[in-house]
Figure 1 (cartoon, rainbow, N blue to C red):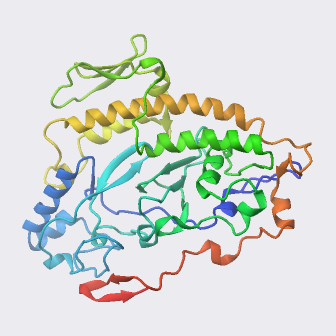
Figure 2 (tube, helix red, strand yellow):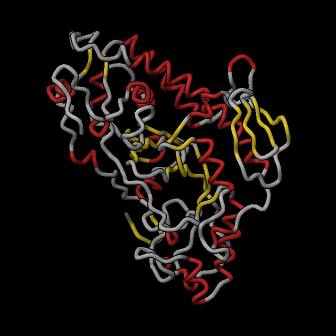
Figure 3 (spheres, rainbow, N blue to C red):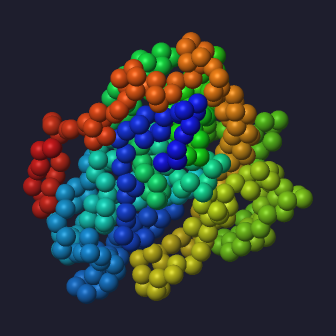
Length: 396
C-alpha cells in the first residue's frame, strides 16, 4: 500500500471494509453467456454426450473433472452427483457481473466452477452490494459496485454485508459510531464511492454538510450502477434509440463522433454522447468490450460448448445496450462532479474536530483500528444446512 504523510493519513479501504474475498475463478468459459438460452443449450449438449465426448466438452482442469465431488452452491439447486453420470435439466441461470458494466448469465453449479467462493454465494441476496477493487491502472474508477455476484478479476471483492438480509455490515467495528453521521452502511458506501482515491484510501470527514454532499453523490452512483427501480434518462429529454434497424447478426461496431451515432453494421443508434463512447475499463472501451462479448467468434473449436450462441441478435441486447449508453453518459457527468467534491474533502490544516478530517491515526487513538482479526473473516453460519457431495448434508 502506498505510504501516506502524517498530514494526509487517510485510512485504507481494507481497514474500513475488512472482509474481502478473491473473485470466483471459473476455469472454463462456457458456463457463462450473454443470454440464458445458450447456457441451457450448452448444458443439454453436455448431458447428451457420453464418456470421452462428455469429458472433452466439459474442459477439465486440475480443480474440476467429471469425477470431482463437491457440494451444492449455497442457495442454489444444482446437483451434487459426479458429472460423469449426471443427467437432468440445467440449473436455472443467474445474472452475474462478468466484467465492469457487463451483466451476463452463469450456470450456478459448483461442479462447473474451479473456485466458486461459496462464502460470497451465502451472502448474495437483494440487499447485498458487492464492492470490487479494480486494477490500480484505472485511477478514474478504482471501485466497481454491483448487486450481482461479480466475476470481475483480478481485484478483491468486499461485500457490504457479512450476513444475508442486510445484516452485520462489513465495516470495522465502531466506525460508524465514531464518525457520528449516519448509522446506515449504504450511506458509508456512498461516501466511499465519492471519496475513494486511486490507491484505495478513503478520506473521512466530520463535517456534516460535506458528508451529506458526498453521500448524495455516491447514492446517485449506486443507483446508476445497480439500476434497480426507475430506468435512468439523459437530461434534456435526450435518449439513445434505434434510428436504423440493427441487422440480424451485426459484426462490426463503429462510432461517428461528429454525428454522435453508434453503427452496428448498417444499424444506427443515436444520440450516443462522446463521453459514453470514451469510457474505458482495463484500457478497453466499455461499449466495444460489451459488443465483442456478444459477437466475437469463439477461439475454441466449432464443437466446443462455447460455440453454442444465439443465431440472431436478441431484442433484449438492444434494450441493454441503450440502457448501458445512458448509464455511461450519466456516470461520466457524475464522476466529474465527484472529482470536484473530492478535492475539497481533505484539508490537511483542519482541526480534526467537528469540522475536520478523520485520519487513520485518529481511528487508532479511538480504538477503532486496528481491525479485529475476526472482522477479516467471513461470519460463521451455524444454522443452515447445505447439500454436500452425493446428496449428503453438511452443517456449517
